[in-house]
Image (tube, rainbow, N blue to C red; front, side, top):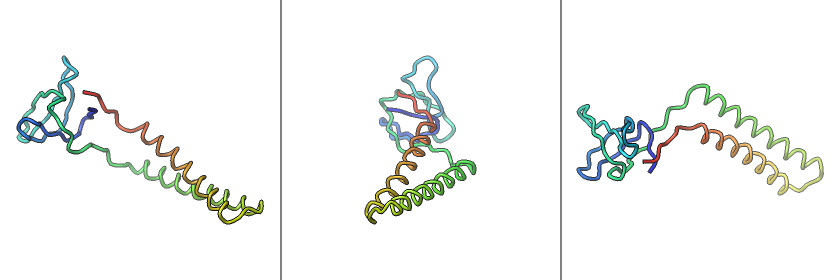
Length: 123
């Protein structure tokens, strides 16, 4: 199982939910969990089940980049479809070119976001 700081987990033994705050420095198989009441438990990873993954809220910079990628992908899709039309292609070929161009650029962006995302540690 992969965990990151901020993930919400549940202890299988007594069904108490808590938030992952780190790993035990002496044993990487032990997870430090903060449970309600500001108490801290050190639990083995096999006794935990994930309830909710933590994701950071998107920053304004990230939103602007995402908008620029969408606008750029739409522009590239239009250029591809228009080029196919000028070359005498059918409407089906125009749609395929536009869709392929947009999907390709969107996929590259999605992979970049995934690679730059939060790191999870195997426990």
